[in-house]
Length: 312
Image 1 (spheres, rainbow, N blue to C red):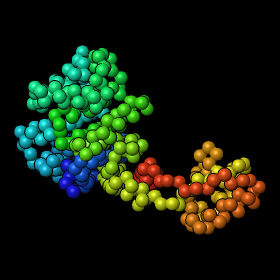
Image 2: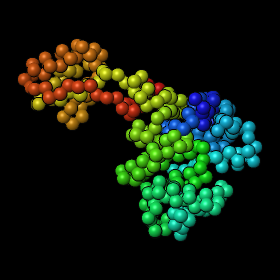
Image 3: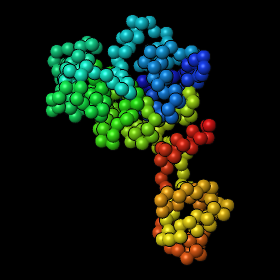
Image 4: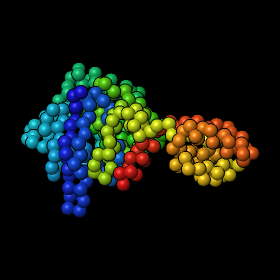
C-alpha cells in the first residue's frame, strides 16, 4: 500500500530531552490515520517535522514521495501546497466571513475563478457553515475548528494534517468536527494527531500509539483490539451484597484484576472455563442473585492504557 507519510528512524533531540526517539511508521494513502499519545509524547514535534517546520536530528521523513529533510526551500514550498494543515488553535481575521476566509486561503495557494467559487461552496456545506452570516469573530470554538478544516482543504490537498482538532471542544462541537473528518475518508489522506482515545476509535481506520517519543505499536483499530484484547474481561452484576462478592472473588487465584464500576464488577480472569463455573457458585453461596456475567468488549482505551503502562 502506498504511504502518504513515511517516517524512518526519526529522532529529534534537544539539549534537555529527546522529543522523538527513533520513530518508524507509515500513513497509508487515503486513510484516516490516528496519531495517538499522551500529552508530551512527541506528537506535535513529529507533526512539525512532517511539515518541514523542524529539522530532524537524525532519520528520514518522506511526505507524498518527497524526502522532506533533503528538500530545498523551493521544493518544500511546492510540497506544502499539496498539504492542508490545521493547528490546534486556528487563527482568523475576525472581520471576515467564512466565505471571505476560504476565498483568501484559496488565493494564497493559487486557486482562482470558478474553481475557487465551487470549492468554497462545497466546503462551506461540508463544514455546516453555508447559512451562517455572522463574522468569524463571533464563531464558537467548534465553528472555528470546522472552518479551519475547510480552509485546509481549499487547495484540494493530497494530505490533511490535523493537530489536536477536537481539544477543548464541547460534546456537540467535537461531534461536528469528527463527522467532518469521517466524511473525508477515501477523499484525502488524514493525519489526525490527538490524545483523545474515543475520537480516534470513532473516525480512524489506522492508529499509531506514541509514548515518550517512540512508537509503541501501529495497526488498525480492530487489529489492536484483537491483539491486545481478548475475551478474558467480564462484567459481573449481582442483585445485592456486591462488596461480599468482590471480597470472595479477590481470594480466587484465577482472578487477575478486579475493578468496581458503580454496581458492576469488571473481572479479568486467567481461566475462562473455571470462571464460568465458579462465579455462579460464589454468588449463590453468598445468598445473592446473578443479574449478568458477560464478556466486555475491549476498547481502544483499554489497549492504550495496557500498552503505555507496560511501556512505562
